[in-house]
Image 1 (tube, helix red, strand yellow):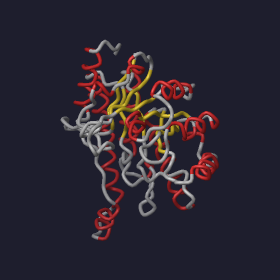
Image 2: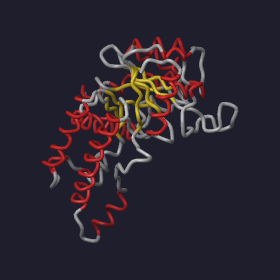
Image 3: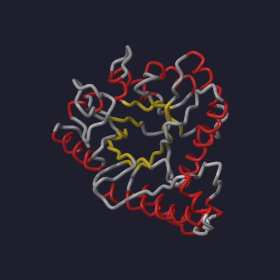
Image 4: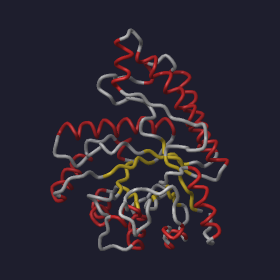
Length: 305
């Protein structure tokens, strides 16, 4: 069966993931407060929120949940370095994380991760690459704790693809095995088409996460059927992960890359309706409402969910 996935945020539920800026935390520190006490409290709230999100997904036939990249606020930030073991609420945090992992496994809820867009592995700037690697290693810390099998990342944003691909291949070697076994590259709507990435992914034995909206905004010579088939082959040891969204003004509008509140059933490819054991993330502004609506639309359309 196909599972539909929810991305990061719930719109109608009182389930919120908290974050804090380094500037705000610095002001708190300057006024005599303990910044790590604040971080500890925020993380407790976030792990509790994740547990609630997993329960919500299990009750609403949502098979996957993408965890926010700021799950541990400022974890990879150089001004406030910390580990969970150093926080005052470490025991509570680890206990709830274990409950999240067990709850997700018992209810067959897939948990995925994706760092922010500033993770640019193909960059020619050493500092940018270092930050990207640090961020991915942070994502792997979360993945280990919650039982996630996938970290999706964009390949980068370089204009010269020949040299960018060579850098990308080289920088893969600096990733830990924990990141490498989970990483999946996605096509974007400005720099890397599926055609540009699929050969690389096959050669480097890395999974390819197919974003069909990006492909429609930034097309290549490959059809949806072509990309779907080739993408599936890159997920040898894990359930394949795809992503879908619809443009805010429709395909005749000017803002093609902007996401609509919901996914138009006409945008869901027929090729995907036949797939089994695959996750399709729904990246829509209405969040859980969009996932629930798309599920109903697909069932009404005869898809096996």
